[in-house]
Length: 407
Image 1 (cartoon, rainbow, N blue to C red):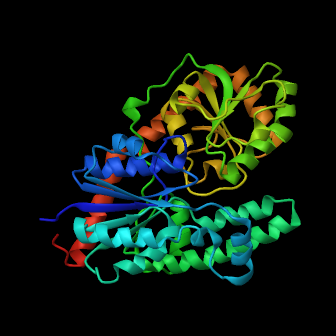
Image 2: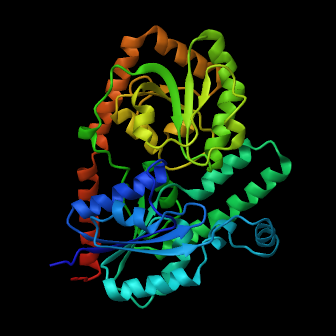
Image 3: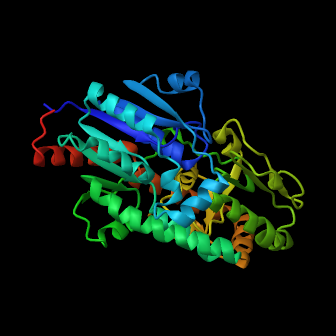
C-alpha cells in the first residue's frame, strides 16, 4: 500500500487568490488533499508577496503541514547588472537562492518522508540537488508555462532597444536553464498540450502528463443579469499584464469608444502601477487591488484578454467561462485552452478586431450569450478537477511501480 504523502514546494505563498499562479497552486494542493493524500506545503515567503503566518495557517488549515521560509527576492539594480555581466545563470533563478530554504527543505524531507515532491516553479530546480540521496522520492515539476517563451515574446514586443537586448539575453539563458532543468525530474506536468510539445521536442526522457487547471464548474453558476461591459483582472506586477493593459487603453480603446460610445471597461489587480490609477480616458475605470475577485467580476459580462506575450494557460479565462462570461481574447491569451474561436470565445488580435468584436456582442447579445454558454459547457467537459487529479494520481502510481516504491 502506497503511503500517499506529497511535499509541494513553491517560490511564493499561494495566497491571495487574485492571480492565476496562486489559484493554480491552491487548486493542486486541494486536489491532492481531496484525493486522500497527506499534503505538506513548503513555501518561500518572499518580500514581494509576503503573507502573515496567521493568514496562511487559516487558509491551509485543512492540509497536513505547512512550512515557510522568509526570502528576500527583491529586484536590485546592482545585483541584476552583475548577474547580466558576470554570470550565465538567469537572474530569475539567482533571486530565489537561499541557504535557509535549502536547510528547511532537507529538514522537511527527513521528518515528513514524502513519496512525492512536486516543485511549482522552474526557478526552484537547483534545490533538487539536495535530494540526490533520496532516490525513492518521485520528483515532479509542474510547468505553469515555458518561461523562456514568455520573455522571447516580451522582447519582440519591446520598442526599447536596450530592453529588447536584455530580454533576448534573458530568454536565451532561460531556455538553456529550462532544458537542462527538465532532466532532473521523473515527471513533467505542463498545463497545456502546446507546452508539452515544446518539452517533448527536446528529446527529454522524463514522463510527461498534461494536467490543465481544474475548475469546480458546479459552484460556478453563470449570471445572466451581468452588465454588458468589459473587465480584466490580473497580477499587475507581471510585465505581460501591464503591457497588455497599456496597449488596450492607448491603442484599442479609442476605436472601441468610436463604435461603442457607452461601453465601459473595468480593470483591477494586485500591485497596480500608479500610472493606471489616474488620467484614464472616459469609460475606463481602474479599481486597483480589489478585496474579492469574484465580487469584482460577478456583475460584468465580457472578459477582455489583450495579452501580446505570456505562456501557460490563462486561469482567469477558464474561471470566466465557467461563470458563463463571454471571453474576447488574443491568440496568445487563449493559447493552451481547447476552445474554438466563434464557438467558445471571440478572437481579436488587433485594435480593429477588438472594437468589432465588442460591437458585435452589444448588437447580438443572444448569439453572444450562446457563445458564453458553449464556453461553460467546454469547461465542464474538459477541465473537471476530479478527472484531472485522477489522471495525475494514476500516473504517479505508475511511476512508483516502475521505481519499485512501496511507500
